[in-house]
Image (cartoon, rainbow, N blue to C red; front, top):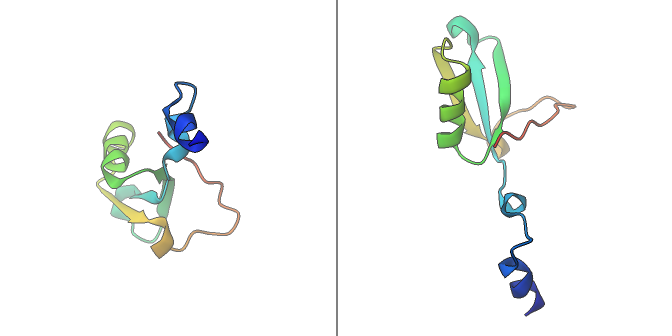
Length: 81
């Protein structure tokens, strides 16, 4: 019962329950050999919205689930809300 009360409390932070599992990658000038990591998002709709706002000149991008792609060791994960 205490866990339920904690979830209903107005002091809890909803952002703690979001998982940033989706990765947005953009390609400069359609050069598919050099992808540019943008960040992690909660879903691809948010990632594509971010791309349109911040990378309007990039023609190509892809949003993929983190579990199914290779990310370099030591990559600093950028969680974009």
